Length: 294
Image 1: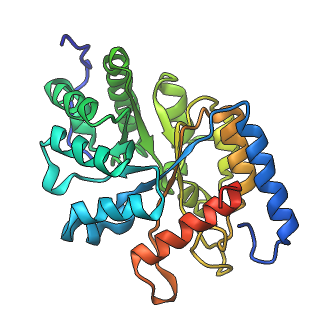
Image 2: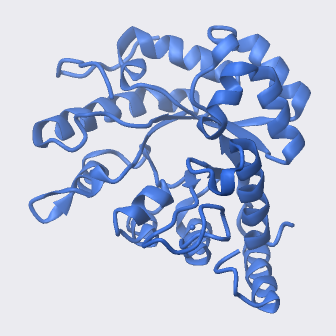
Image 3: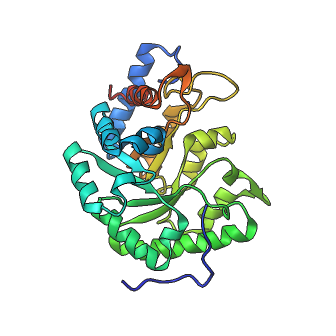
């Protein structure tokens, strides 16, 4: 496969609404999303497997089976454990479980040069369309930000014939500023529209940035978002539907302008002494209730 290459050197990488909302209001919200879904494809619900990383490391097959049994439509990978380099076997296992692949988190280096060929081959085989970088130290540096944008533009061009896209996932530091714009805004402006801007709603909220604004500011670039329960100023609990994130307008933006295909649950806090799987299952139930799918 002949690929365009970058002219720059490659470097190595790296909050049910409030619990007090009345039942009738909750039903109205769910109905609103259900009505919207009549004209817009209803996004599936996936799990970012980093949420249950210790379980994955212990028994990856069992962890995948748990995802299916719990009610997730798909998974987003953060490593392949016993299936590393075994795309056909992984695809067979996913098919047995009825799981799809929403996306994967990979390093920037896997999007460059000859490594990209292997990246494409493996992820096409498992049915993964979105290749997302979860962080890169260059992102929030003046020169590094420009270099990184060029890498993503080249990768996007090379991925397009394969029906695949690359993207970037935010934390809080991506909203630091260079001049009067955040690095997130600069990256969005410097990259082509085929580059996915994966909003981690939890981190965006923690940075005191409105995720709705970010989704609407860059229409058609939120194919996969992270629904991470987040608590701000000590209010609420880090379980979807019990946290402080205002989810309704986020999902409205996703349906209206985001081209969103996947709502991906990511659980990084485990309140009340519950296990990662217990908390993740509670967040899935909370998300489904918000969406009117429970």
